[in-house]
Image (cartoon, rainbow, N blue to C red; front, top):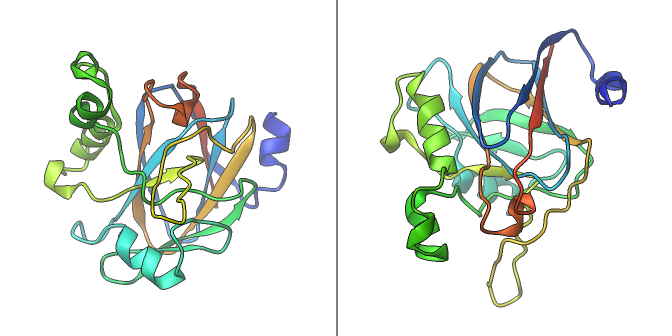
Amino acid sequence: MTDQVLADLAGEILHDEVVAARAPWDHVLRRGQTLRIVDLQGNQAVDFLLYALADDAERYSAQDTIAAQGNIFLRTGAVLLSNEGRPMATVTATNVAYHDTIGGACSCESNTLRYGHHTKSQHACVENFLQANARHGRGKRDMVSNINWFMNVPVEADGTLGIVDGISSPGLYVDLRAEMDVVAVVSNCPQINNPCNGFDPTPVRMIVAG
Protein backbone atom coordinates (compact mmCIF):
# COMPACT_ATOMS: atom_id res chain seq x y z
CA MET A 1 0.00 0.00 0.00
CA THR A 2 2.87 2.40 0.74
CA ASP A 3 3.92 2.95 -2.90
CA GLN A 4 0.31 3.36 -4.04
CA VAL A 5 -0.49 5.85 -1.29
CA LEU A 6 2.54 8.02 -2.11
CA ALA A 7 2.56 7.59 -5.88
CA ASP A 8 0.49 10.67 -6.79
CA LEU A 9 1.43 12.87 -3.83
CA ALA A 10 3.50 15.79 -5.14
CA GLY A 11 6.44 17.24 -3.25
CA GLU A 12 8.89 15.99 -0.66
CA ILE A 13 7.51 13.79 2.13
CA LEU A 14 8.02 15.84 5.30
CA HIS A 15 6.15 13.70 7.80
CA ASP A 16 4.66 10.20 7.67
CA GLU A 17 3.01 8.74 10.75
CA VAL A 18 0.46 6.07 11.61
CA VAL A 19 -1.93 7.30 14.29
CA ALA A 20 -3.15 4.52 16.54
CA ALA A 21 -6.81 3.67 16.92
CA ARG A 22 -8.56 6.00 19.41
CA ALA A 23 -5.56 8.38 19.57
CA PRO A 24 -5.17 12.18 19.17
CA TRP A 25 -2.74 13.84 16.75
CA ASP A 26 -1.66 17.38 15.96
CA HIS A 27 0.78 18.91 13.49
CA VAL A 28 1.78 22.31 12.13
CA LEU A 29 1.11 22.67 8.39
CA ARG A 30 2.80 25.48 6.52
CA ARG A 31 1.07 27.31 3.69
CA GLY A 32 1.27 25.25 0.51
CA GLN A 33 1.92 21.94 2.25
CA THR A 34 -0.46 19.04 1.72
CA LEU A 35 -1.80 16.74 4.40
CA ARG A 36 -2.98 13.34 3.15
CA ILE A 37 -5.18 11.42 5.61
CA VAL A 38 -5.37 7.72 4.72
CA ASP A 39 -8.10 5.41 6.00
CA LEU A 40 -5.89 2.33 6.35
CA GLN A 41 -8.51 -0.32 7.07
CA GLY A 42 -11.70 1.43 5.95
CA ASN A 43 -14.78 2.74 7.75
CA GLN A 44 -12.81 4.88 10.22
CA ALA A 45 -14.01 8.39 11.11
CA VAL A 46 -11.33 11.04 11.58
CA ASP A 47 -12.51 14.09 13.57
CA PHE A 48 -10.63 17.22 12.51
CA LEU A 49 -10.08 20.86 13.51
CA LEU A 50 -7.86 23.67 12.18
CA TYR A 51 -6.41 26.66 14.03
CA ALA A 52 -4.47 29.56 12.51
CA LEU A 53 -0.87 29.47 13.66
CA ALA A 54 -0.46 33.26 13.67
CA ASP A 55 -3.72 34.08 15.50
CA ASP A 56 -5.04 31.60 18.03
CA ALA A 57 -8.52 33.20 17.90
CA GLU A 58 -8.87 32.29 14.20
CA ARG A 59 -10.01 28.74 13.63
CA TYR A 60 -12.10 26.53 11.31
CA SER A 61 -15.72 27.62 11.01
CA ALA A 62 -18.29 25.04 9.96
CA GLN A 63 -20.90 27.78 9.54
CA ASP A 64 -18.80 29.89 7.17
CA THR A 65 -17.63 26.85 5.22
CA ILE A 66 -21.13 25.45 4.74
CA ALA A 67 -22.60 28.83 3.82
CA ALA A 68 -19.87 29.65 1.29
CA GLN A 69 -20.17 26.38 -0.60
CA GLY A 70 -23.94 25.97 -0.15
CA ASN A 71 -23.52 22.34 0.88
CA ILE A 72 -23.03 20.42 4.12
CA PHE A 73 -20.82 17.79 2.49
CA LEU A 74 -17.15 18.25 1.62
CA ARG A 75 -15.86 17.07 -1.73
CA THR A 76 -12.86 17.82 -3.96
CA GLY A 77 -12.56 21.58 -4.34
CA ALA A 78 -14.20 22.47 -1.02
CA VAL A 79 -12.50 25.36 0.80
CA LEU A 80 -12.36 25.27 4.60
CA LEU A 81 -12.97 28.79 5.88
CA SER A 82 -12.07 30.35 9.21
CA ASN A 83 -14.30 32.40 11.50
CA GLU A 84 -12.68 35.41 9.80
CA GLY A 85 -13.94 34.17 6.42
CA ARG A 86 -10.44 33.38 5.18
CA PRO A 87 -9.41 30.15 3.41
CA MET A 88 -7.54 27.83 5.78
CA ALA A 89 -7.27 24.74 3.56
CA THR A 90 -8.61 23.31 0.32
CA VAL A 91 -9.68 19.73 -0.36
CA THR A 92 -7.49 19.15 -3.41
CA ALA A 93 -8.31 15.46 -3.86
CA THR A 94 -10.33 12.67 -2.31
CA ASN A 95 -11.41 9.27 -3.56
CA VAL A 96 -14.27 9.14 -1.06
CA ALA A 97 -17.64 10.44 -2.31
CA TYR A 98 -18.08 13.04 0.44
CA HIS A 99 -17.18 13.92 4.02
CA ASP A 100 -19.27 15.15 6.95
CA THR A 101 -19.48 18.62 8.53
CA ILE A 102 -22.44 18.26 10.93
CA GLY A 103 -22.06 14.97 12.87
CA GLY A 104 -19.94 16.58 15.59
CA ALA A 105 -17.52 14.95 18.00
CA CYS A 106 -18.48 12.25 20.47
CA SER A 107 -18.02 13.00 24.17
CA CYS A 108 -18.48 11.14 27.44
CA GLU A 109 -21.63 13.18 28.02
CA SER A 110 -23.17 12.50 24.60
CA ASN A 111 -22.27 8.82 24.88
CA THR A 112 -24.17 8.67 28.17
CA LEU A 113 -27.19 10.41 26.68
CA ARG A 114 -27.30 8.30 23.52
CA TYR A 115 -26.08 4.91 24.64
CA GLY A 116 -26.52 4.66 28.41
CA HIS A 117 -24.73 5.55 31.61
CA HIS A 118 -22.45 2.51 31.33
CA THR A 119 -20.63 4.25 28.42
CA LYS A 120 -19.60 7.36 30.41
CA SER A 121 -16.09 6.05 31.12
CA GLN A 122 -15.38 5.33 27.46
CA HIS A 123 -12.76 7.51 25.76
CA ALA A 124 -14.22 9.98 23.26
CA CYS A 125 -13.23 12.53 20.61
CA VAL A 126 -13.67 15.57 22.85
CA GLU A 127 -11.06 14.15 25.22
CA ASN A 128 -8.69 13.59 22.28
CA PHE A 129 -9.19 17.16 21.08
CA LEU A 130 -8.55 18.52 24.57
CA GLN A 131 -5.36 16.48 24.87
CA ALA A 132 -4.01 17.63 21.50
CA ASN A 133 -5.10 21.25 22.01
CA ALA A 134 -3.47 21.41 25.44
CA ARG A 135 -0.09 21.13 23.72
CA HIS A 136 -0.88 24.49 22.08
CA GLY A 137 -2.32 26.22 25.13
CA ARG A 138 -5.97 25.77 24.18
CA GLY A 139 -8.81 24.44 26.32
CA LYS A 140 -12.46 23.42 26.13
CA ARG A 141 -13.71 26.92 25.25
CA ASP A 142 -11.56 26.75 22.09
CA MET A 143 -13.51 23.76 20.79
CA VAL A 144 -15.65 24.40 17.70
CA SER A 145 -17.77 22.29 15.38
CA ASN A 146 -15.49 19.84 13.60
CA ILE A 147 -15.15 17.99 10.32
CA ASN A 148 -15.53 14.20 10.22
CA TRP A 149 -13.45 12.81 7.37
CA PHE A 150 -14.78 9.50 5.96
CA MET A 151 -17.89 9.64 8.19
CA ASN A 152 -21.31 9.04 6.61
CA VAL A 153 -24.10 11.23 8.01
CA PRO A 154 -26.96 11.16 5.46
CA VAL A 155 -29.73 13.76 5.74
CA GLU A 156 -33.28 12.80 4.77
CA ALA A 157 -35.80 15.12 3.09
CA ASP A 158 -37.47 15.81 6.44
CA GLY A 159 -34.17 16.87 8.00
CA THR A 160 -33.57 13.65 9.88
CA LEU A 161 -29.94 12.63 10.04
CA GLY A 162 -28.16 9.57 11.29
CA ILE A 163 -24.72 8.04 11.67
CA VAL A 164 -24.46 4.95 9.49
CA ASP A 165 -21.80 2.68 8.00
CA GLY A 166 -19.01 4.63 6.36
CA ILE A 167 -18.51 4.89 2.61
CA SER A 168 -14.74 4.58 2.78
CA SER A 169 -12.63 1.47 2.27
CA PRO A 170 -9.00 0.47 2.93
CA GLY A 171 -6.46 2.86 1.42
CA LEU A 172 -8.82 5.69 0.49
CA TYR A 173 -7.73 9.21 1.39
CA VAL A 174 -8.38 12.93 1.48
CA ASP A 175 -5.79 15.60 0.58
CA LEU A 176 -5.81 19.06 2.18
CA ARG A 177 -3.61 21.92 0.97
CA ALA A 178 -2.92 24.50 3.68
CA GLU A 179 -3.80 28.03 2.51
CA MET A 180 -2.20 29.60 5.60
CA ASP A 181 0.05 28.35 8.37
CA VAL A 182 -2.22 26.21 10.56
CA VAL A 183 -2.28 23.66 13.34
CA ALA A 184 -4.23 20.55 12.36
CA VAL A 185 -5.82 18.73 15.31
CA VAL A 186 -7.20 15.21 14.95
CA SER A 187 -9.11 12.68 16.98
CA ASN A 188 -8.90 9.24 15.41
CA CYS A 189 -12.43 8.52 16.57
CA PRO A 190 -12.70 5.96 19.41
CA GLN A 191 -16.50 5.52 19.13
CA ILE A 192 -17.68 1.90 19.50
CA ASN A 193 -21.42 2.45 20.02
CA ASN A 194 -22.43 3.40 16.47
CA PRO A 195 -21.32 2.32 12.97
CA CYS A 196 -19.08 5.33 12.19
CA ASN A 197 -16.03 3.11 12.82
CA GLY A 198 -17.69 -0.21 12.10
CA PHE A 199 -17.81 -0.67 15.91
CA ASP A 200 -14.04 -1.33 15.73
CA PRO A 201 -11.73 1.75 15.67
CA THR A 202 -8.60 1.32 13.54
CA PRO A 203 -5.37 3.26 12.78
CA VAL A 204 -5.07 5.98 10.14
CA ARG A 205 -2.05 7.42 8.39
CA MET A 206 -1.02 11.09 8.24
CA ILE A 207 1.38 12.16 5.46
CA VAL A 208 2.61 15.73 5.02
CA ALA A 209 4.21 16.74 1.73
CA GLY A 210 5.48 20.02 0.37
